[in-house]
Length: 598
Image (tube, rainbow, N blue to C red; front, side, top):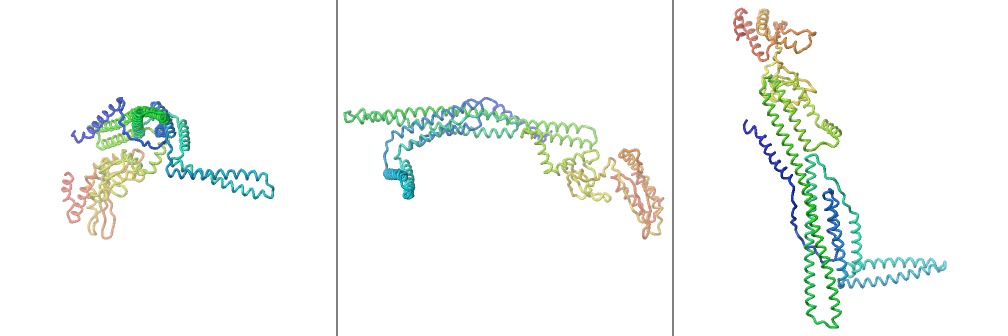
């Protein structure tokens, strides 16, 4: 075979080798991966409780988690909760130690708050007095005092709203550390309750059966790994930021220690010395907290790295399964190609009839292709969960949508049967006569010829029919095993001519030329009818005379071979023309005999 013929086999083998290398490499165990973190510096100017680590851990824990991932998820959630507690303690300490410096805006808001509190106290006292007065009032004065009490209550509610608004404005302006502390405590309590309610739900590893399921599971694992890698980079960045803050606090403390050692101590400076000592103690606690937070972030980063490695191992398993699916598809294709080549070689070397050989080859090739496609689809989509329901719905949908194709495909089996048609047969389908040039699974192509009773020469047009005509309609096959057919000629003998001489000459010619054809046709008809009870139709030629205006019409009907029809018809017409022209029958007999032998 040439390289062009072996091209598909070579390509499939090369792809199989490439996929095999991928299966081997993804089947090996992967060592621990090193994290290449992208570090960033968080803004630490505002005193807030940093909950980013806990929020990230909760989001990751809520994802589907396998048994191998569970230890990492639990450790990440526990360390993230500790990190939030440390962040809260640091924020509280910073809020407590920060000196309150009121800005002009905060000073103005504080004045408004004092006025609102004074007005609220006055209105509340008035409500108390009016309430007591209403209880002791006479009936004639009760309504008036009740109206005044309702008005005082409304004014007190309005004053309370003004106090709340002023406190909120003062908190935003930085002049209410106590309110800020209460807000942080409430926020921490809410975050703690949310963290306590989060549980690691272990789900079994996804069981995939088809190539598409493998790819979907692999895509989900890639997305989860990306989220964990982002959390790892965030932990590394926070560790760097906390370390930088620790170093700044340590350098500031060292500078203050040098300044205090150089300064002269006296009784007047004892208060300043006490404040400096207390400040150093607070700085030491802050540095200790920062050290703990740095250590927590590093441990979180290590946990996320290990978690990501578990996902990488799962990804390799999915990649291995996907490559195995591709390898299975390539093996199916390779086996199908090799079996097709073997069938072609086996049938090509057989000595069966050409029509049977062609039918056997087409049926085997189509069956092999259909089986290979079904196996490949099974590898791609996997076995359906509910096979009965799936097949029922799929069959109903395909029957409605692909009715013509299904009927055409079934019609192809009919055409491939014993009473069907083959390439090269002369057939008539839906009023179109022609030679079969293509016979596919869904359509049949004819090379159109003239009417069968006419010349039968090709017109050059190709006519395509779906094979549904074999089921829903009918067709005529003029190409029997011997290709025998009835033909007829009509000759008009004018008045004054003897038609019997022409009839006898035509009879002699037909009996001599069609004897063997008639015997063979009768034998084939008897075999085709398969019923000895039915009388056999004779294949002998028949000649009839019919009077017409101006003469007599000779009507001759005979059996002949399809390939000899035009030649025999030309001989009959030629003999009739010679006899009508005055040539006697005995004079043309030797010529007819010599023509028949040739």
